[in-house]
Image (cartoon, rainbow, N blue to C red; front, side):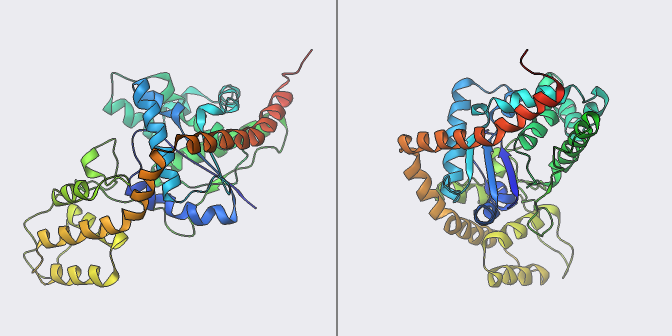
Length: 331
């Protein structure tokens, strides 16, 4: 049975991009693998969230995970900061990581460009902490989107470097778990190619959104004036609407609007109304479960305690072995 690990930063609520990017498959994956899902509150500190917001966001993501179908009895669901071993392993790995390779990471360079007043050390060392998250459980596979593929490659490099440096064959070289498909990106309602709350919250449809909020967001989605000749290529914003519709609507519905577009008869207002209705129907069972879980703090605390215990049971032997190999031993 493969060990599989995935984490998400607690920056609000989970959205459809999170769901279709991997979460939908996690429900199946937990039946066949030894799965570890964590809420990456340490990673979120690079953006300096308010303490009260951080605690709320951790709870929101936990609730969304459970409502979407993750089973804490079948998988290990934990909060990153409840596992101190990950910090120690990150420190130990960092001794064999070089500044130059961290500065060349695409996501780091993009963060520097976009937030020049907050280029903190946590951003630079982000790939090391991410590697520790994966390697502390000696994971075989990691579900990643295209924007995280470079980080996974670096994790493999760090693992191999440790093995070579200390002459051991301890760390596995994890691979991307893409469920036998191309890695998925769900587009945003604002015309961007990825649904991301860090870019524009209004471009996201959250699993916790009410029907009224979903309708309002979808009806504001970016469109154009419509095709002027049959079968012309779709602009990005229009392709986004069709991609979202393919995710939540029936094939017959998608085909109807494809035909309407290709024959220059499409009415975007009608398409948006249908898309909103299909999104509401798709999210409804998850949304109902979210409302139930939010008020059940006793159950949430039980889930967190169980997850921390199971995560520690997996991580402690890893750190113990790494310390011994490095030479950190009791006198």
